[in-house]
Length: 175
Image (tube, rainbow, N blue to C red; front, side):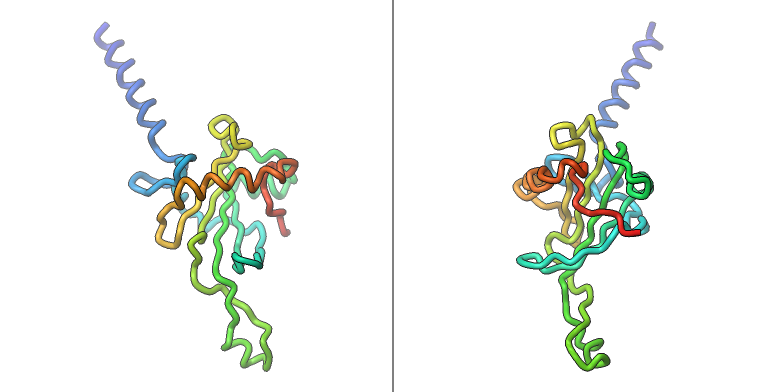
């Protein structure tokens, strides 16, 4: 009987501990508010989904990356994305390259500049855990890995809601 109680206590403790660990990343990292997402290990090695340039107040260039699950869904045209999909977005200031422009003889070249405060964003698919936000959890971090505040993260799902037919994902795959 003691063994059974000990085993039940161990399983319960492990279950509670598992709920406290961030969705992605590793222990000790800061997590984004609301969704509890940390920066995934190795995300810079993920495959490229596409690139984009945002004008207006953002005026950035960005690379959109996907983990293996997301890339497979993108390539197969599979919607909704399966659970475990993670889409990353890395942004840099859209900066003219004086060095390149000297070579070209005119202003035409732009490169990645410094990291803006919205440097790094993630969408993590877990249809049960994030059911209230279309099955996606959202996170944003600055270049030092500090998460955005709750007010900022709270704007993510309302922004993505109009593209519900594309499973809330703005970026299309660029083969």
